[in-house]
Length: 452
Image 1 (tube, one colour):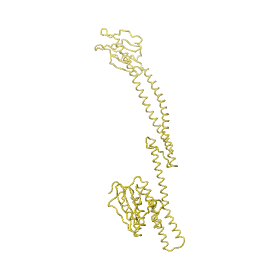
Image 2: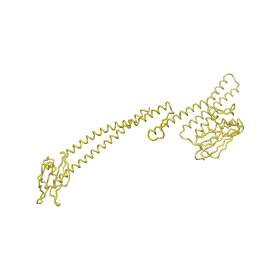
Image 3: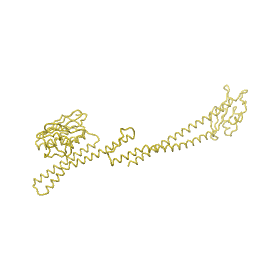
Image 4: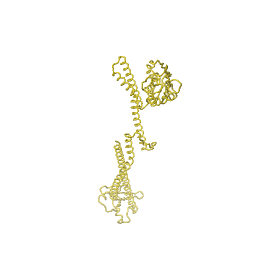
């Protein structure tokens, strides 16, 4: 799927280079020919001025009249120069009638230049004056055919050269672009292969230094997010399977026993109660895992009131506390204590800790919210059998229970392992605090910058 995109990029780059090369070469051709035309025009004008000046320098004034003291030789005739006294020609070369009429029209006029398009001839008129008195006019002509021929040759040659250069540039650009994009195509194909067969594969080219290393870093980050997403999905499936296995087995066992033989209404009620509790346990597990999944996929962490979340967790455990005649107390500062975590997620973290405390406490469970510098601590303490020193790490493993829980009452099934994962997902932690008596759990969460 990635190769057509690279091919399209190669074509677009080649097209951009082709357009840029055509525009650049066209500009060069136009500028070159304009400069050449200007230079040829200037050279032609310079030749006319030189011819006219040479003839003017050879003229003499006799008795107030303009005289040509020396007869023009063949070279002078070839130079196409007219000498007028007023409008009367003193000397004139062999020229066409159109050119002769144009030269006569310049006699007696100011210094100027005209071009005859019909004969491709340029004429330059110079007044002849002595002591401020106008005596005549010298008109020099020059054929522009050699200059026009030079322009045509230069234009054709420059176009041919530009076509050759353009072909070479396009071939070179095609080769350079193909070579430059070859690593990109290879990296794209490699990333596509990794995404299907080995999500742990990485380019690992180090910090971005150029476009290719930037692409490699981007693809590594993309593969990393894909790998993390797959790990989360696998973990979610494993946790869901683990947490639901026990209540499903209990529901099935209660149903099979109830259907195996006739039972008293009380026995049926007890069986249905057990099924209801198992269903509630399953519902709580599913809801908690869904909250965790939503929190993991959220682009930003919201702020929440830890005091409010702790109160909700405490209220959810009131029934268990009353059933076991356990006093459930909560100590918290007035006002909001904000944490950088979803409120529902915080409640799901605290609920299994408070519930476990209510199930194993002898008489009292205390929940304390204590804000600190950059952190928020929620401690759940009970006066039950506590957690043995060698169990403080093991009880957070999936499926593990402490010695005090063996044969004891069954909880919701949410488990300390899931609670710790949720806390770490929120940037916090759950730990068992040391103590001689009772269970002492401390939940640490990142605190928001401002508290109200």
